[in-house]
Length: 253
Image 1: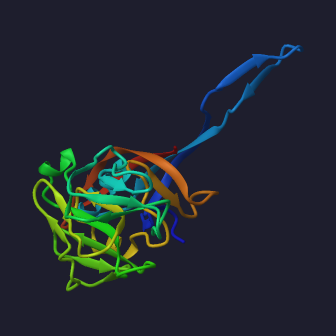
Image 2: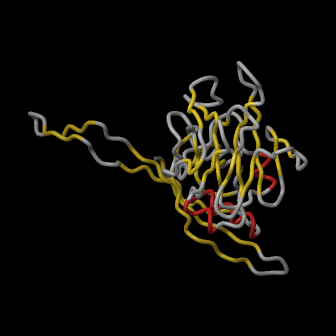
C-alpha cells in the first residue's frame, strides 16, 4: 500500500504535521464531586501534507481531489447527487434490485440528463459509472470511465476503443440512454483524470460522496477514513522543466 491514497489514487507526499483535536462536547454536566462529565466527545485527526515534485497536470488533479470537486450520485434512495443536483430531464425508476453498491440503482425508461450548475463552465471532464450489461433478471456490472481527452477504462483497464455510445456530454449536460437496463455510482468530475488515476480508479467500493474523500495508506493508523480536504496552494520549482509542490490539509469528517 502507498503512503497516502486519496480515493484509491497514490499521492506522493509527506506529513508536515498531524494533530488530534477534541471536537467539543455535545453534552456536558458537572458530577457531584465537581468533575466534568462529557458525552459523545471524539478526537478529530488532522494532517498537513506537502506533495513531492509533480507536473502541472498532476498538480491540478491533486487540487481537484483535495477540494472534492465534482459530484457523486449513489441512487440509493433518490435522484439527487451528493451536492444536491437532480435529474433535469427523462423518466426513470430508483430500484432496490441488484444495485452495484448501497441500496439502489437507477433504471431509465428514457434518456436521463444531469446538468450540474458548474458543468457549463467546464471544458475538461471525466464521467464514471457502472452499467448493468445483463438484459433481464440479475446483474452483470461493468465499470466505465471516460474523459474529455478520449481516454477510456473498463473495469480499471485502459481501452480507448470501448463502446460508450450510451453516454453523451455537452458543455452543459451529461446524458445516459436506455442502452443499458441500469446504472449506478455515477461520478462527474470537472477535470480530465490522468492515465495513472484512471488505472487506479476505485473498483471495490463506491466513490465517496463529494466533497468528501476516502483516505488509505501507511500514513494512517486506520483505513477507509472519510475526510474533508483543503488545498493550501503550491510552490513552483523552476528549471529546464517546471515542477510544483502542493500543500494541503485533510481531516476526519
